[in-house]
Amino acid sequence: MGNNFITLEGGEGAGKTTILHLLSEKLQALGYDVLTTREPGGIEISEKIRNIILDTSHTEMEKRTEALLYAAARRQHLVEKVLPALENGKIVLCDRFIDSSLAYQGYARGIGMDEVYTINQFAIQQCMPGLTLFFDIKPEKGLQRIASNNNRERNRLDMETLSFHQMVYEGYSKLRERFPERIKTINADQQLDKVVADAWNNIVEYISK
Ligand code: TMP
Image (tube, rainbow, N blue to C red; front, side):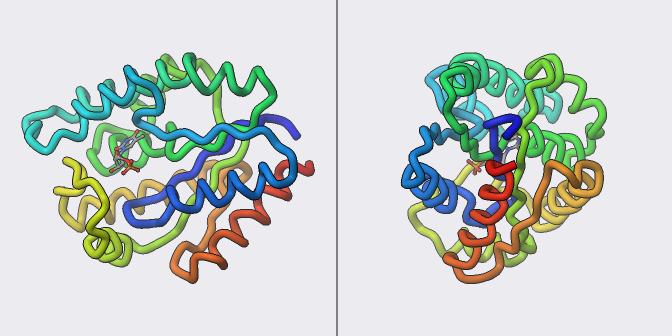
C-alpha cells in the first residue's frame, strides 16, 4: 500500500460522517491503527477557523477569504494531526480535504479550480490522499436528507441555494474525471449497509495493493 491517507468527499447529506466511523471500526477490527478526523477542524486552531467560516452571521465573507481560511485550517490540521499520525503508521480517514475546496470554492463559488489548487499547494506541499471516496448523491436528495435531520448543525453553507449545491456536484464530477485513479465513486443513494459495503470494498482493494 502506498499512502495511508484516505479522504471522504461529497455534497451535503451524503452520509460521509456516519460512514467514516463505520469504516474506522471495520479497519480496527482487522488490527489497523486508525485516526478519524474532519475538515475544516479536527484540532483547536482549525475548529476555531471552522467557526469563523461557518458562522451564519458572516454573510459578508468574500469568496477568496473563505478559500484562504479553508486552506489555513487545512495547513494547521495537516501538520499538527494528519502528518504525525501517518508517520506513526496510522491509517488516516479524513472527512473532506482539498477536493472540497476545489468543488465548493473553485467551481461553485467561481474562483477557478486551478487558482484554488494553487493556494492549496502552498498549504499542503504535495501531501495528497492516496484514495478518495466520493459519496454520490444528487443535491436535491442530499438536501432533503439534511432538512429532515434535526440534530445536524446548520451552517453558512447550508443557507446556499439548490443551484449552488448543483454547481458543487458538477465541480466534483470534473474532479472525478480529472483524477480517476484516486477518486472512487460510491453510490450514496442506497441503504446505509450497502453504501458502507461498497466503500469498504474500495478500501480493502486499496490497502491490499
Ligand atoms: P461539513 O458539513 O462536511 O462538516 O463541512 C462544512 C462545510 O464546509 C460544508 O458545507 C462543505 C464546506 N467546505 C468547503 O466549502 N470547502 C472546504 O475546503 C471544506 C473542507 C468544506
